[in-house]
Length: 288
Image (tube, rainbow, N blue to C red; front, side, top):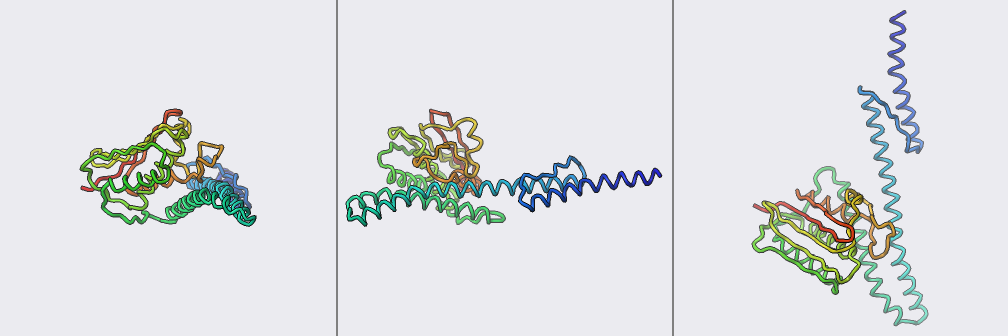
């Protein structure tokens, strides 16, 4: 009798959690993404329950991310499409001067949309890459990256005060020219967008620190809230919930910057104070 009772207890101890796992799996399959097994066990069944719950968490996050992406892209498309429609209406009514006047704003909108599309495609390439992301590296002088990024910023925002300070005799860096320059471009563009006072200066400094070359972007803009700092590298995170056109985008810029820098064996760090400005420091290994 004791053996029978022991067998029943053991069977129940095994069957109950398996039944819970089965119900959780069925609920997830039916679209109930909040379903979790929450098994508090330290054996193999508990480990299986933990893995199922972890998978459910990741699926739920992926779906939330997909919805955020669609919402952000829809938001960014609305204004340029409206402007294009207005320009076409004006041209159709014979008001060619007014239509021509809107072309400059449309060109800016299209450039912003191209950046968004590039960000999304680059993010997809990083996600698809199963191991190390394939970089097209070349040995480059840091000044080449800094000068190209500075020229781009000055061309896009000629009235913005901007200072570059590139140290002499810097060691070369082994980087993907397109992707790494994109990181610096993104940081400078962020510094501009989040410095609403057009007289506030921006700066780009490049120096050597031990065996690393450091690119540092500084602004005196609105800064980042302390609670938001740990989240700035999270995909689609935006501290400015108002989503104004001046600070548009889909929230992928810093996420991609971090992935690109880390793919080069480097680091990226942000320090900021609300109302005082932000410093972003990117360090990559120097070529020996």
